[in-house]
Amino acid sequence: MGILDWIRGKRSAGDPKAEAGAAEALERIIQLTNPRLRFARRYRPRLLPAVQTAIEYARSLVADTAPEREASTATWPSDIYLRAYFATAEDLARAFSRSTDLRAWFDRNPAAQAVSVVLSMLMVERKVLGAALVKGELQRDVPQTTVSFTDYRARICGASQTDLRHDIERRIVDQLALIGIGIATHDQSRREMLEQERALLRARLRMLESQGAGLTALAGKEAVDASQYARLHTELAINEQALKVLATGSEVLDFQLERMREVLASPHVHFSVAGKRLRLNRMNVVVDETDPQPADTLELQVARVPLPDAPAELRTFSFVRFPRSDLLARGALLDDAARMLG
Image (cartoon, rainbow, N blue to C red; front, side):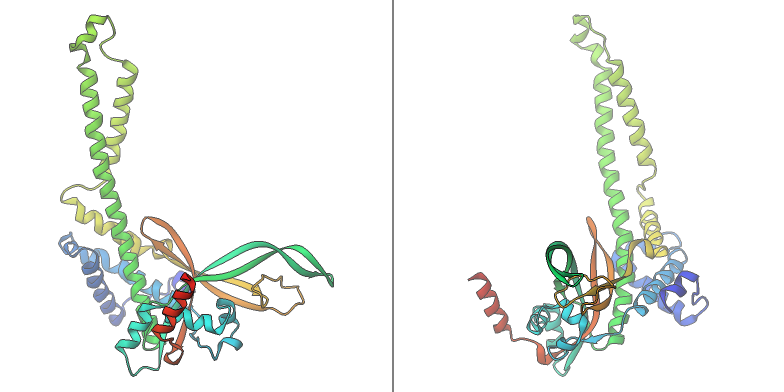
């Protein structure tokens, strides 16, 4: 099922296998986030439909991604994507060889000759001035957009493309559950802050109300500053209203479960993948569709990856197959690091 099927509402309702998978995923994310959520009121019937929605959404996203390509020094010269991602074949081998997760996977699987892996990168677009042919004449200082790829990560590995895709589906659902519990935790932290603020406001009110009993009466001033008193009362009312919507005591588990349910039930709000079409020449300069110079059209996939306490990060990603034979020796990587430091 693709993302269009998911949007149109073509669900696998009533499928025993799907329901069993959702039940298994539910127990996994409860254990991952907060095992005490099992004590929340009717946690299974409340969460299970949302979990199944998240699973189907994750499956649709993964189904719509391009098939894996071989990422090797041998295929680099003929693969337009790899040439765009890496300046040279050696850069390709170096980027994958620097991944500790990929190396660890090969160490755990000594008989494997290749690994399926998700390659993710930051895509950087820059506005520059460069030379270009304009109406058949070479002109300088022509506005151009260049594209480069950096911050390569190859951390999620699998024995096959099928295994890798199943793992990604599971990770998307887990990430959504973590987002939900993170929202709840943030709100509870806000409650603590509001309670501290309330205590401070009340203390200031008591102090203001008691001023008439002090020496201020001897000076002939008003016992209480009316405008300050009114402002404190307004701030306290706002504080009390904000506290009413936040859980307390025994409500905390229900509150956490509900935030998780909301995220899992609307996964597209929190995690998405979009397509991006680029036409690049051999120098990774963006070229117009009508430009006659040699260029390649790339259909890229960009994921909006949520990060804790930070704006979401946009990363281009691709499913690839990397051969063990291109894995550089650790000594070669150390030599590279030494040259950079030198």
